[in-house]
Length: 233
Image 1 (cartoon, rainbow, N blue to C red):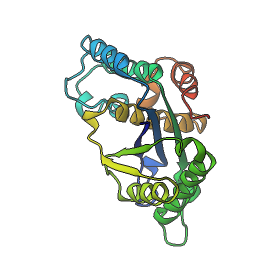
Image 2 (cartoon, rainbow, N blue to C red):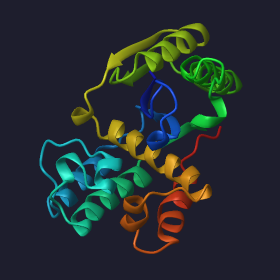
Image 3 (cartoon, one colour):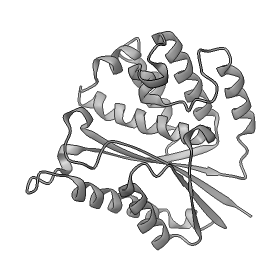
Image 4 (tube, rainbow, N blue to C red):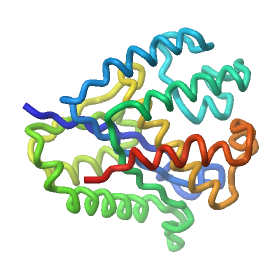
């Protein structure tokens, strides 16, 4: 029996334009469960032992970059070590992804001052088109399992609408971030794709710029290698 896992992560808000969250990102990470990731998982867990990582913590890319939450008291070198180990795990894993990243201002509904419905409509359309264009691949699996932490009801609505309409036998499962390294990898992809757009717009924050020591480090060491993991049939 063949099973496709889809780990879903998002960043941004549907609740109107916020200059501090001017981008919205949605990432789908795909893993054919016939392709074992145990060696990569074991290596990640072993290498994390030699960092400031707190066991039981979900590696969360943006807080690592911005020195927030569990990383608030850690040095930049300590945070970078954990970030690079998770990225190395992602690069080694037999996974692919598709991200949908939007500038909030481009979907802002100026008539009512909110982008909630226009953003929902655009994302639904883009996810639907992607699935339709690759329908043969997705329907080749006996089972599809979608993992999401139910962080935003709008994303749950998109997943339910698109997946149940276009795919057969989709099993939706709530995902606890600490339980799945692939969910944390999806979070990292989402963060990096947002940073790709922000870098192009010359809109990186001070903490985002300083986390990557050299101006080209973000692009050369992370954004360019990440492109190799993008979904392609």
